[in-house]
Amino acid sequence: MRPRHPLPPAGDESGTASGFLPNFCESKTVFLVVLMGQLLAFVLTLSTGGGQHGFWVNLALISLFVQWVALGTVLALCATRPLLTPLSAFQAATAAWLITLGITLALSLASLAIGRQIDWDHMSTGIPVADFLTRTLAISAIVSAVALRYLYVQSQWKNNLESETRSRIQALQARIRPHFLFNSMNTIASLTRTRPEVAESTVMDLADLFRATLSSKDTVSFQEEVKLTQNYLRIESLRLGDRLQVDWRMEPSVAQDFPVPSLTLQPLLENAIYHGIEPLTEGGCVRVDIRQQGERLDITIENPMPPEQERRRRPGNQFAQESVRQRLALAYQGRARMNTLQSLSHYRVDISLPRRMP
Image 1 (cartoon, rainbow, N blue to C red):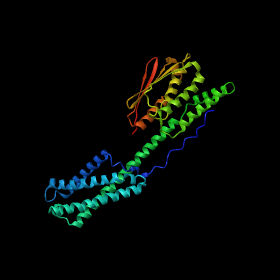
Image 2: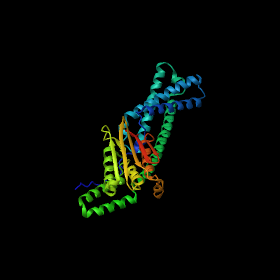
Image 3: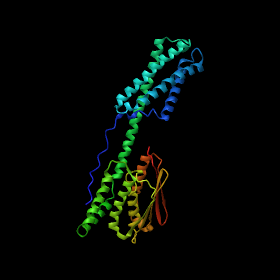
Image 4: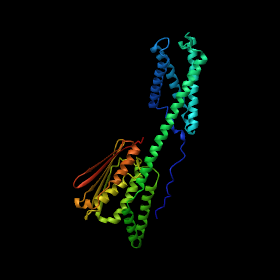
């Protein structure tokens, strides 16, 4: 008897809300902060009217100070990232805001000290020390608060969009064609008295298939995906007998731990059997070709096409293909490829998946 597996747990809800903060250790984030800092320097320079030394000198001084603050804040937030990650959104935002003010205050005092050393009174601004500190801290407080609010709103919008998309994709994933379920149950019933061991094994295969469709697990290893697909093929082979032939070709170099979205192969095999093999009286052969080229996994599924008259009797709505296509778009954000090619005698689906997901 095959061991029963417990149902998969529901989605993990233990994530913290502080994930709205970007990774300040990444070069992309540093570049954006520097760019935004320079834009702020332009705005501040324009608001002062150029100062007593002219626009460009004033711009250079303000840019130097703003970039000091920007890079100092990025460095501090990068160093404290492990401490901020477990915090709630409010706690993380408050900590980041206080860190920004602390860096601004420290660099403001440093700029004043440098100004005294080079005998350039208050960096040639003519502003008293108290007013200089008050203004820099006020600007830093307002700008950082607006930036943190923007990051939080953007993160919430992105999370809501992904949640809605994921719910829609899981709803597509959970649907199984009723005809497959009924046919499987009829097959099991016919085997119960004559071949009880095979009937029991088929029940377990069917249970594994349902468990996968109801699972909240988005990604599995390629080995798990192949096992699930072969469970499905065993069920269909019992029903169709010699009418179903599968030419399964997988290169030995394919990494079994290659991560793929759950239920990538099975819906396409079901589609090939339902539309390509079942309408043919003599049946046919479904060809599955799997190969790995560097960091990409290439999969080809090809099935014979019935005559035009048979196609009209069971028109396809491309539900299985659209379900797989949407889940690949969600998982790989446009870096996966899925193409279809139909001829008079054959239908072919080509999939190319990168190893790393965003």
